[in-house]
Length: 52
Image (cartoon, rainbow, N blue to C red; front, side, top):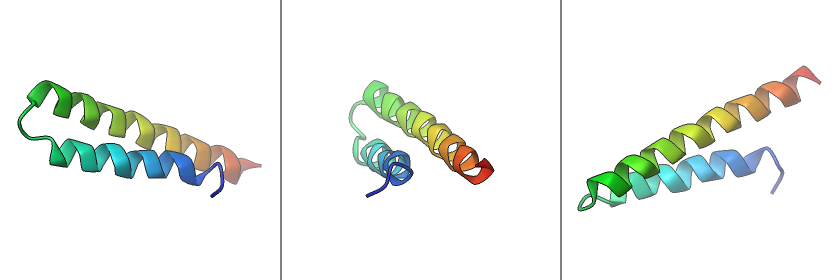
């Protein structure tokens, strides 16, 4: 498990939670937002590591 894999893992976890939670719209939206933020972080970390 490297540092670069953690953000992608978070994307999968939050994305899965956003799909699973269907009774609480507010919580589902927060999970989707968290997945989006994690995706941005993952892309950023990949970009930074590729630049080195």
